Amino acid sequence: MTAAVLYGKEQLQIETVDVPPIGPGDVLVRVRAALTCGTDVKVFRRGYHARMITPPALFGHELAGDIVALGENVTDFKIGQRVMAANSAPCGECYYCRRDQENLCSDLLFNNGAYAEYIRIPERIVRKNLHLLPDHVGYQDAALAEPLACVLRGLEESNLRPGDTIAVIGMGPIGMMFVRLAKSVYGARVIAIGRRQPQLDRAARMGADELIVNTEGTDVVGAVKRMTEGRGADVVIEAVGLPELWELATRLLRRGGVVNFFGGCATGTEVHLDTHLLHYSELTCKASFHHTPALIRKALDSIGRRYITAKDFVNGVEPLTNLLEVMQHLMSHNGHLKTAIIP
Image 1 (tube, rainbow, N blue to C red):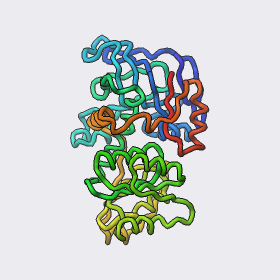
Image 2 (image 1 turned 180 degrees about the vertical axis):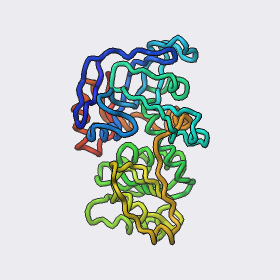
Image 3 (image 1 turned 45 degrees about the horizontal axis):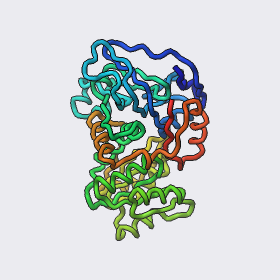
């Protein structure tokens, strides 16, 4: 089969490799759509991911496709079924799993290789995180379930309530998902903060009520305060992963507010926060990582209800052979949303 192989920092090759063999509990899926992701771009730029991928390795993790082969012990699925496979599954037995923190599982099994004609879905994911698609849900729509599940966790962890004001920093695909869900599902008032007007115009179409262009010299804190009668936002989401924006996020909150540092900074990054502000304003600082099987199911339900659709988040379609050029483009065009890679 044809597949993308990551060898290191910005070293990606499209090669002919063996179709992965499957074990008794595994499933082989023909990939119909694989979506680019900000994490994939970071992995491409850095050449690795400490938790998920060590090169040389097959690459990509947001996918949907068709089952083409089943292990002899698989009884819940059939050849020909349309499915979405999450990129991980928890063990269900460790300290964290027993405390309903499956995203922090000590033995969290990751699966990569979506940028390929076929992908092996290992037994644990087959049992816990492989899902049939309703007839009205397309492959590109379904492939959005993985990042959407991460966003749902971020909103749940932030205790967002109807009528709250939420400020979202960063208008990439993840930030846009926060805007859409905060408005359509939670009924919140949304302030979108981004660097470029076209991004903010898109956020307005997603449901954002207020827009702030965060360019050099912009008083973002003052702008948010003016939009909230001087209080600040109830919840702030940092969806970029830059230390200066983590610091900014805390200054946008009202007293008693919640900040979610959703955007992961590079390994070794340090952030300096105002302890006086944190303490005397009783701020809650949280960070959300990854997803759980329950949230994948909830994400697919949201997609089935058309709260989220591919037409809002996928603004390019390319063959697998063009993946290197796509990654290079995404590195320099962070306002771009997602590209659907069609093997």
